[in-house]
Length: 482
Image (tube, rainbow, N blue to C red; front, side):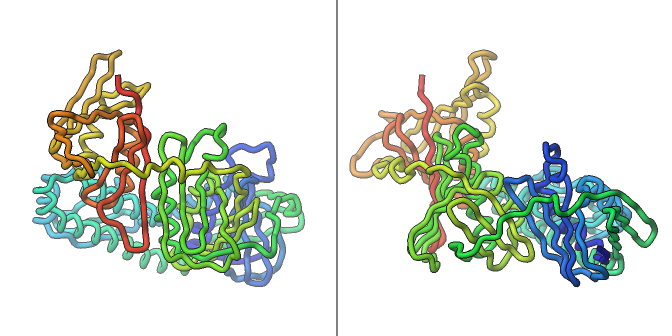
């Protein structure tokens, strides 16, 4: 097998395949990446037997063949080859006054990765190296979180500057991609594997050899026909997975909850996750597909994380039967076994008569809960909420250490159908603070609504506004108040 491939493509696809390569395995062959070349078409494949990733790559093919190459050595080598270009400097202008205004209000170290600095002389942000899409995404998400946590007054003044900062990060990434393309388009790696599975990797400045394994020993997924399928935009799939995956159970003993339910109806698609103490559900309205009947399947949490990391923009195709799932996203195919169990009847646990509604600013509530979380009992993670007509008291305490905290924020609390003065009859309820923080973390509106019935019954958290084709909610069970 012989072919030439650009460094950029090689790094990109190896990074994607690395998500399923086990660090240790009872089957040594799984620690390899399978390469199969036919003409100019290269298939790169990796698996841990539960999930499987196949990348279809265009290369300069010289001689057909196949081999399984040790993944860790290959990844380590290629990453070090790329590190040769880390002396590249990317810069984008940013006004000094805007920088100083932001610097007095925010901590840039919470946003920017270490290699990005502000240069006063040139009034620009500079970056040493090539900025990856993951690094860009991390910084943008950090900007959004800090922006959400600003006070109302600060937010009015700084939201425009925060947007400028996010635009600058985007521009840094665009400039980095331009440089990357220019560098790597001229840099080719030559892969040569002989019939003894000896693999030689040749670059512009060096040559490296290692021994691979017989390609016939590498497990490949079963290719099935006549699968049910539907299509969905990659951005929508990633967004919906991100909305609910935190609510799935991380415990293997709860097999039927250790994943995300895809509930396919005639006119809508629902993604649901629960661990028995909370439940996240998001519904896509006006969803069309050609399947003859309603369907349900549960994808394992690991597969959900893979999709969240790997799905690309544009149309993604999901094909499935009763035991397996295949997702085609761009030039990558992701296979996964499905959870062979029955998901709980989630509709029966969602309360329909929560008549008490709390309307509150998300950023204020989120920051108050973060502060309260410092003082909670580590065993219960419990925060107590005492709700009056226009005031919410948040209390946390740790009996063992004697630590306690209390905070008061404004809110609006009403009861539908009956006139109750909550200043005289305070509503008391407690929650696991981590569950509240997770739910608020995926809410996108400035205000949220939490509906209650009784202190012992489930509460529902929803955004104040939702897109026309979407319906999102999170159910959170309370903990006992002592």
